[in-house]
Image (cartoon, rainbow, N blue to C red; front, side, top):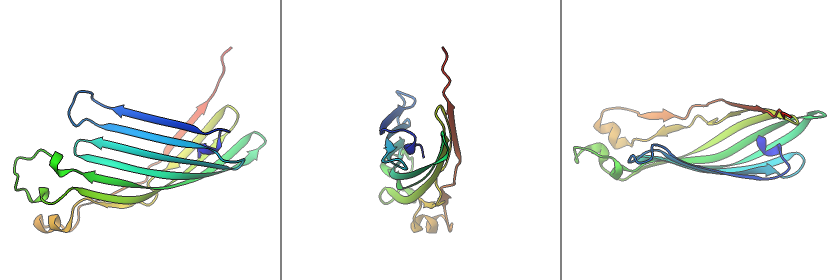
Length: 176
């Protein structure tokens, strides 16, 4: 929803390597671009890659924001974002003691899920207050196959991508 705030496009990137020097430490890379297409429409997009040991998340999304005036110097932007996330477990990167473990048989586990995010942003000349709700679809993430369920006598080992609520805000105050 912040795509409609400024009259220019912004390109941002973040590369984070946690716990430098430790094997399989978390690494995150993000690239985003967003900005105002015209008086009312903002567009944006994000791609990311998040790796921790044998697991990874890779994905991307595109965003559309519509901004309208609430008062002469206060605007409200509503946005919807859609995309996907791919979850992956590379079995060969998991240290195991029992090479015959049935869970380790077969190839890597790869699951792709669609996702959507809603966002809103209320802003004035020197402040903004925003809210976003990712994982709107509450997609089920089934990382284990039917063979695992049969061997371990379980019907389901599913996770769910649960909605979160993020709030952001800022006030710009000039001193002197």
